[in-house]
Length: 122
Image (cartoon, rainbow, N blue to C red; front, side, top):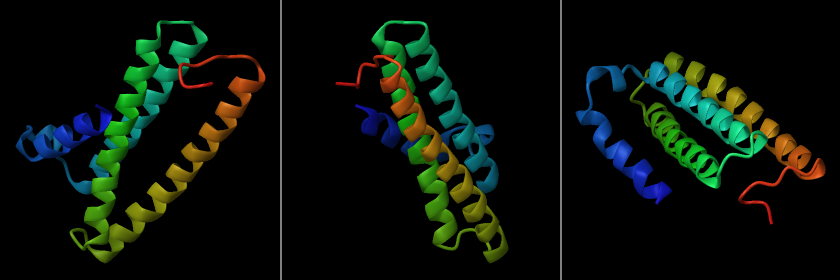
């Protein structure tokens, strides 16, 4: 279901109003903001013992925004952006993506260590 939502969003993106389809670096910032917001939704859902759909909705939001950022990065790699813009976008996105990945791995270990149970922990 999450992949279908992500694919639907990416297919609808060219038809959406201009605010959803800005120049590439802004699109990348929007998708990274969406991924961060999805993390916040998932953490709040776990910390406040909200029903499991909050965590799942956050996961879907993360998947959709991650797929969007992958599409933007592929546009940069295929030469849609110029060399200087592609270099800047790829460098910033790699640093930000690495920080999110490290944070997620530490957060997952900490949640299991301190007894927070999420719907995907088994």
